[in-house]
Image (cartoon, rainbow, N blue to C red; front, side, top):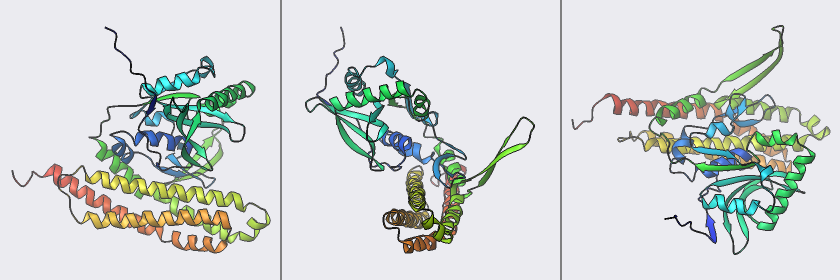
Length: 369
């Protein structure tokens, strides 16, 4: 007997639209899906490091490269659907069918105002003839709806753009395929997460500076770049803000303030998001212990204050971009100077306490034996 397939008039897959990284395309969309997984907290606790590149911009990645699709393979399945074999007349049916099979879909669409943008499709409503999507709007990823006709039109425009500019395909392919099917894996080995999480905490607290050199065919250094990771990003942010203040006269004169203000907002938003991930990881890690040393709670509470301070700095940077009030930058400079020492002290105390709890459980038998 043939198994009857249920037809839906409306379906919405689980999604976490308030995910961090709201201004970073690939990271936000993947995390919005991962947080809908039963293993989302465990996966996040053992992933996501940051680095600052030579242009003083902070990204999520390892030393000198951002995370690409393969980084998520332990929790997400990615499959490419050839968009040349999908016509604009077929795209609506394709998306509905994939969502019916519990697949999230990321499709590049082109709008004349915003250009090429990735859109995460996670639901539809046939009666209203619309899709539920998330995409970049006004500098942040937001939940929105697109009508079936809009999706057809924007998908057609994207295909036509790629015919006119075929080199654009390679740039798109770096983050997602033009049409990407994404499925949450229903298996994830969370048992060895303790080691991965501890390694991540150590990488954060022992933030490092790397010098990466490139050689020519004669073994001569032709290029040298400096990258910073973990907590080492904080002293660099201090130096960068100091440069703003020191060069104020030239920044205003050369009309580069808007770009530098955007850079500052980007970086402090990244640092803020990163700290809330670490805070969440602290809380998740405690759930893995049968017996908890109560003295760890004040340490976690102290780190939560660090999160709030960095969020305050992020908000101040956004305000500076809007107002161009240099007194705000002076306050940012003052607050940043305290961050490195404070956070290193708290994170070091957390690592020591977690290590003590872990060995207490693993090495010594329970008291009732």
